Length: 595
Image 1 (spheres, rainbow, N blue to C red):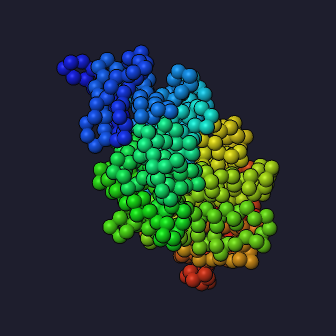
Image 2 (spheres, rainbow, N blue to C red):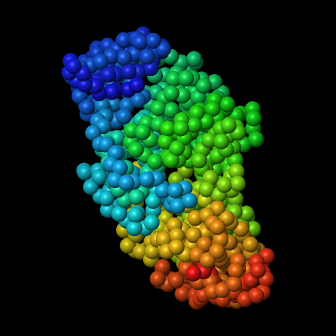
């Protein structure tokens, strides 16, 4: 489907194919026929498809489809267009996309699940705003992320197409990469450069609805079932209603299912990406986006997710499919054979909500550390790595839209309170079981709302360079760079000391257990430092402090609370065989392990 360049004995050209079952005729017009008002006709080939070979049509030329049955607006964008641009009169037009960039292997392999550290970022931040050479600065950004310890970037602000235009987030062109960002070859180049640095690339996809406006996809071939219905791509009854309009894809129509399947697998196969993050999954599986509402469940939506995830597992099983569902249903990551949706992992709404609530509360007495302790050790289907943990994320329409430091102290996101509690949140994310995720800029205390079409203020990385170092140190511990914190990559987790009065939690993490494996994380949610706080430990001997979140090297406002190594004595405590008294600063995390 779409525009496919070809070369045969007679020469070269492009095959155009489109699904328009209710059209009386279809033609294509573009730079290859001087934008002929009549266009080059496409011919019916059965199943509602129309196609034609157009000799002489070239890669990078622009085009539109002409559908006369759309008498009010017959010029249509190709739903499968791999590139979009502004044409005559600023209209969005398709671009015949090249595919000159091949995958550079160079020994790259997808990092194991238990070593992933995800960095959610908009494409504009990586390519340097409106740089006339879109990828001129991307290598610097990738080098900085590699040095930080990031090994997955999750891209947003790319899918819709014209990412350099106001309101682009509302454009519904699922296959398109903006020509301002180098088109799909630009994306392939980015993926290759990331892979050369050991960084995987995930792509954000949106299958819950067309878009707020639906664009040329609305009544694409002129058909509609009624005055308010959208035609062949969407449900035309109560199932079509979403928070974004009556634009939910018709998951039961074979051609629409193929359209979404082709999109998902196309990014993985043709653009070399390593995983997909599905946005707004709850609106795919339920008309009202709810749990425990069987009357609103969408069986077609469940089967679509199972089908696409099943094909991804069969064809490239090392690549991940991640759901941003936020309702913590274990069905999301359960195998399809057991009635699940078949995702590899899902965002943990409980973790994010509980941790953010505890960090945002101004009054220590109101912090619910019991809820935090429960959220830390949560799993899906008894697998720690089926969840993604975070405190900041780009998910429009949710409580996570505002940055954590700004929520902690509105208007004073660089205050001591914001910095200390944001640092505590980072330690939680990077020591809890699961796949940790950071939102771009989180490592340098960004407080402006995340915009998928705008670049970050990267100068804050210099202003808060110590905060960047804090994240780097935590990521290195999380990935066990020094072979002293192997347990942070494991699935074992127990919140063994929870003190609601002192606002203190101690967490035991392990993989197989033993020295250099067992890790104890002490988390102080109080504005007061704690001296001589006794906690249990898994075994006797010296426990070294690998990370102290109150170190002044991370920020000049921090207190440099003395938290030294400790020797475990024979006193049983917290259900542990031995214990020790530790000292931990205000709003501070400590990470301890043995040599």
